[in-house]
Image 1 (cartoon, rainbow, N blue to C red):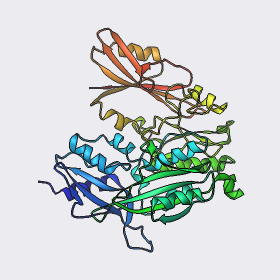
Image 2: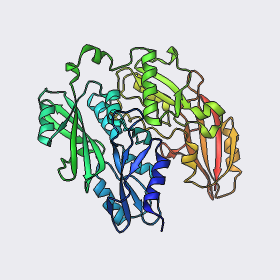
Image 3: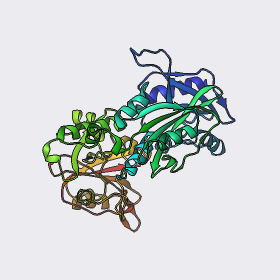
Image 4: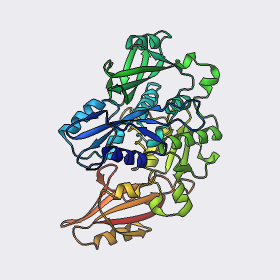
Length: 434
């Protein structure tokens, strides 16, 4: 039988770009899995030689040979119990959503500030020896940080400065004396009443006391209590600061794989900047399979979290937003969660083997080509768009199927028949798969 330690080690090495330490002996074993505890080795030149705690410290290694996974940050014990009842392999994208405590907290903070945002998904690049300090320095530079002995202390600390005070709470857990998967909660003082929220679980926080190693509070002053310099820095004031905000967001989400494309003053609009971006690989080799689908990024002037545009009707959505519409209010949809840097491989691999890729310049020719395919043929249609400056921007994926009753073409973003738009079309591609 394969050594579960080596299975965990191989998976972690393939998932992370930073060195990790993994305990040789599992911290738990169930009928269906082994559970290991991991930690981050200190960065080169660090003052300490002690391993640093990860947020996603536990890794579950299924005994049936399925890929390992990190249990959910909001409820790792419940997630492991669910795996015992249903041991099917975990979908990596779904499991990433269940470990996105950082993104969920950022979205909650933006929403409390009046700028609803979707949570950034978990990325392995988020974990590093100084991840907690880096997270606070980037998003909450005025936070006051310290340990709290209990939940009453957390509530009192957020309540004492008055309304508008907020906080990020890092709950460090342990299992049999070893570091376990932790969690991030959000605290907010609303008119003197302190609420502790679990943004990832979309519920009030569970104030855990068992298997809790430490509670750390990063208290965030109310906007009115922050120094003028800090308040002024909340939103980008010019192109240079907007570019810095965009680059920081891209680094946070994509770990350096994506860069801005020709940013300029012409990208500024009433409420923000509409930038273009793409992968370093695509910009270097021009291979469409390395390109982004979501190649647009909006940086709001109010300092809220940058976001991408919807794949369907992006320009209408952006125009409404730029004119003052509030996402999540009065039926105006929230912006989408960010997708992978290069869409082709992660999208096509689960669908089946790619048989051919055909390029088109217009819809009539493309539709004619699809119509000639035999019944049962399936394809993905990739619509690539230009922005107003002629740069590649947000695209759209449609699914095409040749059936007994004719051709079906569905917009996957709306789950509705595709609209054959023509304005700003850069190119069209049909990817036929088995």
